[in-house]
Length: 266
Image (cartoon, rainbow, N blue to C red; front, side):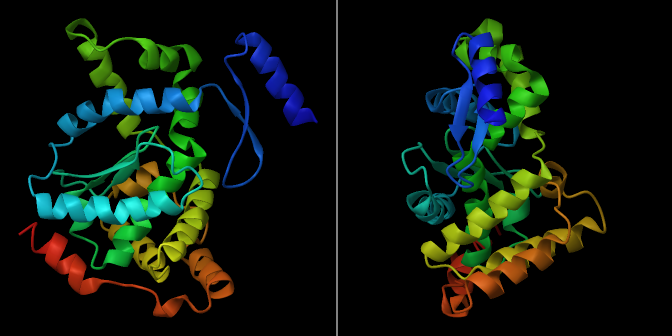
């Protein structure tokens, strides 16, 4: 009752622009200031600038088609298959992956070089897909930057005069940090997506363990923008053991990943 009352008050404040939506992953009502169509609009608007700032797309159709094919398997089994999902590999050395509102999902060459199986790739793309489904990026932007600034980012046409503002906003999107609760939810939903798509969920535990080991010798961008919930690898392994006890026989795909990604990046 209290949560719904808050939503009604906020809706009135923003002339019914804002309101509550049910998070399709958790089933809980959450405050959301923008519509799903706003997510799609913003994603389309800022995707080219993200690619520009992070070195552009890797110029390799074999690699890009492979990334897209694995990603689309995650999108298909998600709670929001209607979003316009695109999965793109960027030519940037940092170890990171992130999602724009509406379905544009990016993974860097730096992260790709540190993975060793299709299941590990699927874990990253599933995790980012969950952020899109839960609309975490738009929600976090609204909290960190304020309603008016994000509204302007959605509604202002991209012109030569607004190019500087678009570039600045893109930098803020790339550096956006999720909450630890968002991360836990995305991990759990990502595991579900992986299993439904036929992938061994241990790929997620392996990926998070690799990132944590790498972080001991320096900053890993993924863990900076996707902060580690407490005992992340431990609770992922525990959830796999409890919820997916027979998942060990699902797809890992080391040879396919080596052929379609690692060899293409040489």
